[in-house]
Length: 270
Image (cartoon, rainbow, N blue to C red; front, side, top):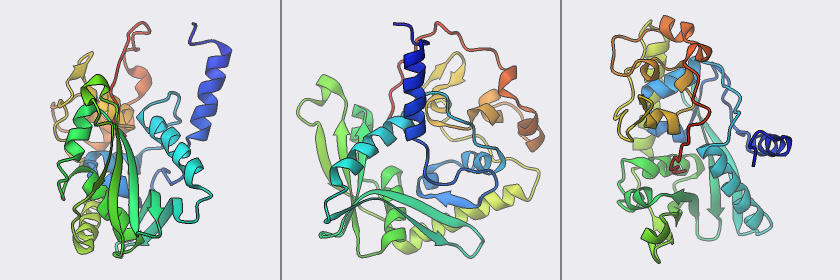
C-alpha cells in the first residue's frame, strides 16, 4: 500500500482534525495544564515562547485522544458520569491552571483517568508513588474539582503475551494534599516567569537519554516532546550554554532531512 495515496492522506487529515486539542496552546498565554506539572522547566518555557506547530502526523497524543473519544461516546448519556470536564483555577501570579478529566463518577465521587500503557508503563503506574507520574497529574485534577473526590486509574496493559491475564486494572491513587500540589503549580509557573524575565534558558531535561537514541538524537525527545524542533538541547544535547537567541535562530528546515525509508517502531504511553 502506498501510504502517500490520496485516501490515506485524507484519512490522516480527518483524524488530526478530530483530535485537535481543546485547551490553549497559543504562544504567550499564561495557562498551565495539569499535565505540565510533570514536564521539565525547559518544555514549559518553550511552550510559552514558541508558536504551536500544526500537527502533520499521528502520534501518542492522537492515540490518546482517539481512546478518549471512545470513552466519551460510551458514557455520554449516563447521568452517573461526566466526561471530559475542563476546570480552571486562577493563581495570584497571573497564571491559570487548567485541566480536563477523562471521567468523573458523580455517585462515588471518583475522578477516573484512562491509560493505555506498555508493560513497563503498567508496572511503573502500579508503584503508586505519591510525588511522581500520574499521581501528580491526578492530584492536580482533584485540586481543580474538589477535595471530596478520590482518584483512580483505569489501565489497559498492551504488553502482549507478556501481560498474560493482567490486561485491565483499576488503581486508586495515593495523592499529595491540595496545598502541596497548589504550591507545585505556583513554583513551576514562577520558574517560567523567572526565565522569561531574563536572557537565560532552562537546562536540558533530566534523563534525556533514558530511552536511548535514534540517529544520534534522544528517543525521549523524538517520542514525547512537541517542542524538539525549537529546542537547543535537542539540537545539541549536553553541549554548551543555551540562550534565547539560539532558539530564535533555530529553524527545523535547516536540519538534515529524515531518511524516508527509515522504519520506526516507537512504544507510546498515554
